Amino acid sequence: MKFFHQLVAILVTFIWGTNFVVIRYGLDELEPFTFAALRFALVAFPLVFFFPRPKTSWLNLASYGLFIGFGQFGLLYWVMQENITPGLASLILQMQVFFTVLLALLFMGEKIKPRQVLALCLSFSGLALIFLHTDGQTTRLGVAVALVAAASWACGNMVVKKAGAVDILGFIVWSSVFSLPPLALMAWYCNGVDGMVQNIREPGWMTWAAVLWQSIGNTLVGYGLWNLLLNRYSASIVTPWALLVPVFGMSASAILLAEPMLWWKLLAMALIFAGLALNMLAGRNGVRSKPAAVPPATHKHS
Image 1 (spheres, helix red, strand yellow):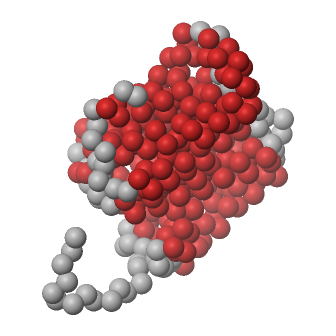
Image 2 (cartoon, rainbow, N blue to C red):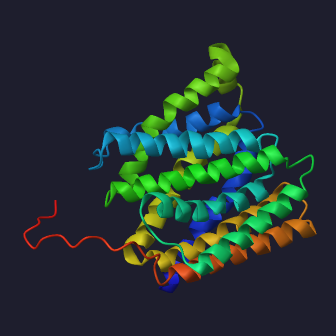
């Protein structure tokens, strides 16, 4: 990878990692589901009128919007309000790598390698350590819901894989339309219409800056640059850079929010990192798929 593109990869992971602190700031004044709904509303509108609909099914767009909008970010915002620190949330979300592998194993006929099993055990031992040391800032409910958010991210990955070669930015913009209904419904359920309106009126400019950063910086710029790298290099070269996300996340949380970096957090981070790195190395040779039947010579690909 060229040096300039390495800098781009570092920039994206910095944006994604420090974004957990931005979420924490936004949650000081915005109710979680209202916050998430505003994020995806600003991603969807007005860009949906300028991006052509991706050449994929409505089901794929709706599924991705549900998994990412509500399952990942809706739950993440909700649990970060009281039940988990930004640094640990950034770390646990990286478990999406293993959930993606497991989903591919179950639903796409892919085979898992022994080294990937070991990698899974290492990372889950790190999670177990977090469970054993929960406190007032991070609860077991927080860890469990963060894992559900990671699993939802993995489900979103499967939807993207099923969708095939589509324009990623267009896919994100159009799928964001489908993120809005469940998030708005939960915001209404938690606050009522009057509460939602009041919650939107009260925040200051810093909170609205956090919302804009979620929509533009984190989603459009972050995913746009990441997609640029994936178009130029193989996934095995680009994906390992995501290991920097929790490094920036935990560092920013410690510096800006005074989140204590206790020994068990560092050990848990080391175990999860070791598992992620081992999984990446195992995947360089490819996660082998079951042999598919050879199509007839006259078969035409659509």
